[in-house]
Amino acid sequence: MTTTFDPVAFKATTRTQWEQAADAWHRWGPAIEDWLGAATRQMLDDVRLRPGSAVLDVAAGAGGQSLAAARRVGPSGRVLATDISPAILEHAAAVAAAEGLTQVVTLEADGEDLAGVADRSFDAAISRVGLIYFPDQHRALSEIHRVLRPGGRLSAVVYSTPDRNGFFSLPVGIIRRIADLPAPQPGLPGPFSLAAPGVAEAAYAAAGFEDVTVTAVPSPVRMASARECVRFEHESFGALHQMLSAVTQADRDAAWREIEEALEQFEGPDGFVGPCEMLVVSGTRP
Figure 1 (tube, rainbow, N blue to C red):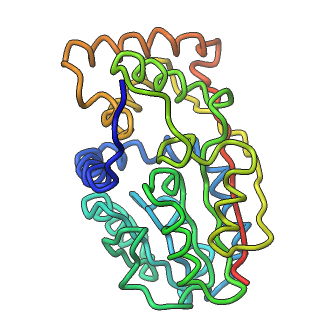
Figure 2 (tube, helix red, strand yellow; figure 1 turned 135 degrees about the vertical axis):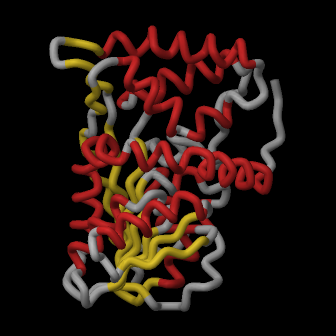
């Protein structure tokens, strides 16, 4: 099967799916923070936040990492949380307000076109599991580079290689087979688009970043059972639904049943422990 990638259609579909998954992603917030907590802390350490820092969060989603950044920069700092989905940003804004984090502001914006953000206006930029899904990662990185002050830092959390992420790569493989999708091509968006050795470093360097580092962070997905993990992925992972969009409902149901069976191998005495490794990719704008 051959397909022609349409970045405009991909982005429109992504926005729609995050609009639909916004409530679920918010509901799963505590589980997401448990899963990505260590990588988030590494990301925030790498951008060297201090009280008063100005932070841009690109593809912020429901904003768990935005709030963590806000706590570090304090009331004298500011955090601008941007996302293509206004529905998911509503959750970020509501939680920030509930916690009294008035330094958090949300903005509906495409990470590839931050036209509303001034040049050299931020000390740091972060992106958690968002950069990998941009159709034009170079443009997104160049926009982040533009809005950072000289010496400003960027840090992004991305997936490591498929063999280290069985909780996600197994479902992706099953869905790809059932939906008769071709193997992912280099340069196209997807969960593992920055995973291969040297790829993320080269992408940062091409956008003008220096002193690029990549830190692997073990991030196992811990849940009560494989069934609960499947429910999490079914409700929250828009990328999987996008891959299944062209197949029948019967094939979709069959895919999710097979995924649950495949993930049961990660169940044990302590429940479900899904293999996952994140990479924290960081660099400096000279």
